[in-house]
Length: 225
Length: 225
DNA sequence: GTCTATAGGCTGATAGAC
DNA sequence: GTCTATCAGCCTATAGAC
Image 1 (tube, rainbow over the protein chains, first blue to last red):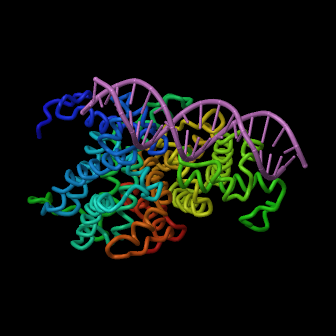
Image 2: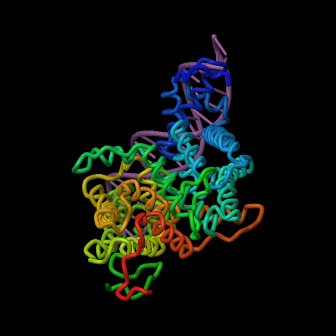
Image 3: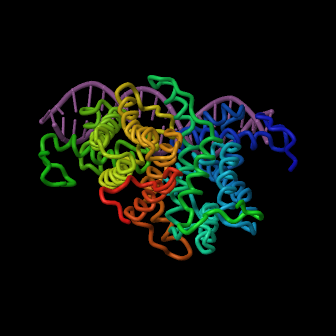
């Protein structure tokens, strides 16, 4: 990847275009499509507002470009998990960790996707729709494998998927709000770190999905007496 | 309660006001505050748009009235769970069930609250802020009690709270989207019913929070041999 | 309480110079 | 590619008649 630095002010080819994508991602996540003002995006990006039309054909075009780029990147990052031959319970733990890593690196991803879902996916046409499904298919695949192979008790993969992904997306999408909440609350608590939440969720799923019979963990090479 | 019928076209006192509250709830949930048009609300309510200003002093006023009414109602419905002397694991199951019942009866509740959280709670001032916290405190209280009394393994109540409520809110807030998703998907599946999800979540939490030692259920009055 | 008419502001988009 | 100037449309809120 030719990305040696994460310069907030892009200097590569088409810096204005990149700046609009980057800032647009932030603002769309913060206030949603309807709340976003093209003037505000251009200003924060240090770019003339007319360039949004030049590059993306309008506000909606910019939004779709961003959503597409985001979904593609996330789908790609999750792809290695699909072909792995590891046991399902391991893969699930990995998946949770990967999701958290992606969400931390791209904080706008959970928020934008969730916003899109709340609005019924009005901006998801053709391409975007498929990529959206692809991301969610990865999770479900792992769960199906786990149930099939007996690594998990016979849960419904879709229901499990919804609970798991719901918890993950919710946690990361409401992070900013939680920080405000904790500060203004009577006793100022500090909001939980992502790592803690991930560990918690991993353990909850590990225990919650464990099959009933005998030891739920795959046997270690040398089992203790 | 003097509400014998759930007439979509209210006929009680101040029917216009009621219609605006009712339709406003729907539309704000569907498209968010910025996406909502006062003209659309008035039209669907069969009421003149100027009445929004007359009754609520403007769009923001209507929104706050709705959010306040919703949060108050939910907090009230959840209140009985706080004083119950039952064991924590039972109360948690009840809580999940109650949440589902409320979310089914008031479909806009999870969506509006989630939207508010995604936007950092910009509309939550004073009163509303407190009522928001109150709802979430109920969940946490039960978890804290459970950990304290040993009904649950020693999990962090806040993290558990976030995972559980996140899953619940996500499920109900994305229901409409899921219906669209399932239809347009290659193989048209039918979206899972709320009851199934609730049962799944109840069992997941029951197993996931069970303490390590021995039997995790409180002993029944007559234990089976 | 409800309506009509209209004001006033803002927003996204375009045309055209450089 | 980037900028300025400008427009047309929409959206909320208000004034005032009934």
